[in-house]
Image (cartoon, rainbow, N blue to C red; front, top):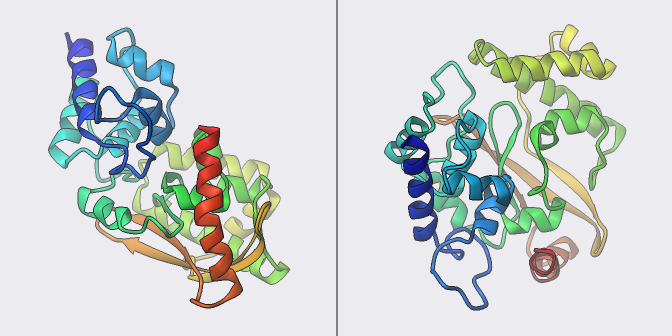
Length: 281
C-alpha cells in the first residue's frame, strides 16, 4: 500500500511542475503540462528506470538521499517533504544531519537567476542543484552520482575541472574547503555520510590530511575564478558565495562586470552552452 501511495504521490507532484518552472525547455508536443519522467530524472540525478519503478510500486525503500533529491526536484513544501519521507518509511533528517532541503522561498529566488550560473551545495559541499547556465559554464553535472557530486572530493582527488587556479589560489581554496568541512563536522557530529567523506579524504589525499591535521579553520571566501571553457575560451568571473543560514546552504553565483569581455562570453554561453545541453538531452 505504501509503495502504491508513494508512486501516486510522485506522479501527482510531477504533473503539477511545469518544465518552465524547473528551468527546462518546454518545446515540442507534450501530452501533459508537467514534467516527464526523463526530466524529473535529470533534475533529481536519479535514473529514469528507478523513477518508473517507484511510480509503478515496483521499487520500495528508497534511500533518504533519493527522497531528498525528489523533494527538491518536485519543489515540495515542508509538509509535503515530510509526507514523502513517511511514504518511504523514513524519518526526515534531524538537526544533527547536514540539511539538503531547498525551501520554496529559496527556490523562487533561484528561479529569477535564469541568465546567471548558479549552483547550490549543502554544508558538506554536495551539489544539490545546478541551473542550466551553471551546467553550461562548468559542465553538465546531471549524470554525476555519489561522491562525484561533492566539491571537496572532486578537488582533492584531482577530478578534471574547467577552473584554472594559480598556485596561491589553489592553496587558499584548499584551505577554505578543509575549514568548511571541519566546521560542518562540528555542527553535525552524528552525520555518518559526512564522517565517511572526511575519513576517505584523509586516507586518500595527503594534502587534505596535511591541512586537516594542521587544524585549519575559517570559511571559504568570495573570489574570482578563471574558467577555461572548451567553446568560448578563458574568462575570469566573480564567484560569490551566499549563505542561507537557516538551511545551511551555500549558493554559488557567477557573474561578470557589464561591458567586459567576460560578460560578452557569458552572454554567448547563455545561448550556445544551454542549447548544447538541450541537444544532448
